[in-house]
Figure 1 (cartoon, rainbow, N blue to C red):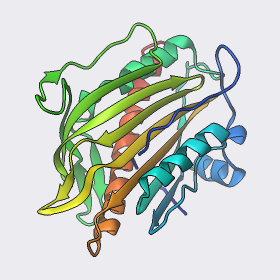
Figure 2: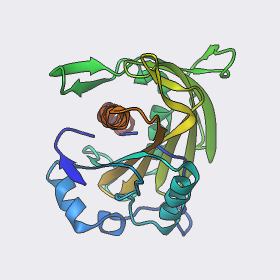
Figure 3: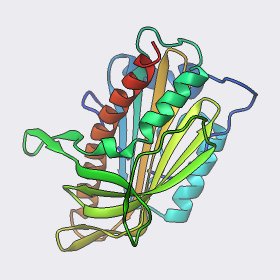
Length: 271
């Protein structure tokens, strides 16, 4: 496990179950250890990249979540896992306790706007410059017909929402994914699974359904804790696992920057 000042990403389907009715918020002390809190408050981003027979290392303290992530690991049998923790500080004017129902709904509508992923960038260490991750991203009616659909807007928070999305990125090309959105008290979750095989050039890097990514957004009072996990069963080609691990980290960097921009819009639009 290491900490990076440059952000780190994306994967897995899971659901958070927090006890108790109504608005719910946990403190950082309840979710993660002090070593991670200190790193996050210092502006660092804890990242874990594992190969071989990896096991998740950064899952926040939630018994249900830990069981789900472990069950997914056993079911998928991944050869690479990338995890990221990121701390977002709510802007002035936001509710410093639990997020309000209005804030949560606005945030949800921002993150289901998947077309806004087009044009997001990450820093390429090898090239020493910012590069675009997705040159297009849009919801489609299905994996076969791929007719573009507009981003949804909700007036009430749904418990679950599922869509297919077509995205083209610089590493894996043009592909279709299934996105699942879940809501639970104090948490919003985005999960993704690849519906098409991902290739790097002529090499099939990750087979169909062998990639799962997720972003979990946990309300923590004046902060939002973001947990990202990406798991893949990658091709046994020399250097491929490492390249995929780097790609997941690049995705994390871009997606987290995207999330912070969407979160800023959600909280500031309520002021």
